[in-house]
Image (tube, rainbow, N blue to C red; front, side, top):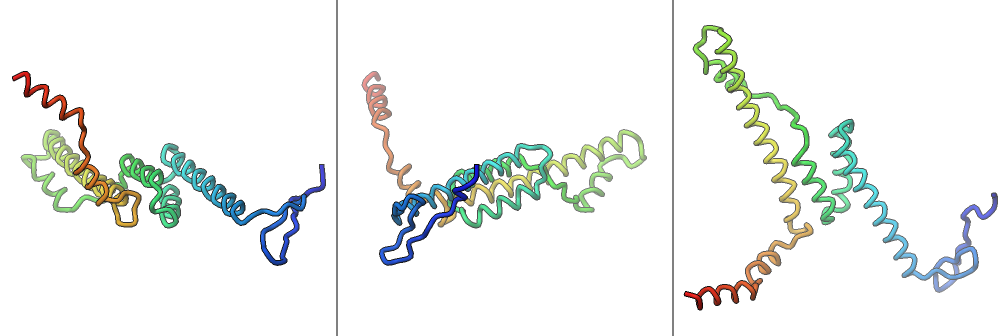
Length: 185
């Protein structure tokens, strides 16, 4: 029914902290924990929405880009967000940028020039190759930018620590196997 509309009284005197409806004081640590939990839940919900926009064939790239940009501004170190953006970049529809005029004239010049069906097929195939190369270059740039975001200085991966780990990490099992192989010879 009615009543208890979520109002709470606030203790404004002295040592701070709010009081709930029962008069209990809420500590600053509890308030901070609640705020962090809420922020985390909101981020996870927004990330879920971003994933839905990526996988929904009816969703526009512009909607995805807008939400991704907003989230990236506030959470540029959030690894799941960066991985989601990387997944989008790998599968995003190509915006079909116009091909350079000299590329299309080169494709037309590839045939004998008598206007036959064979000439058109050769020209179209050359155009497809040019278009495929342009798409591959575009996608490579998009994926590269998304992958680079993982390694920027303020990003989630510390490149120096990663290099140090892989440079110093040593698997003792591999050494044992190598020693056994040497003994067998």
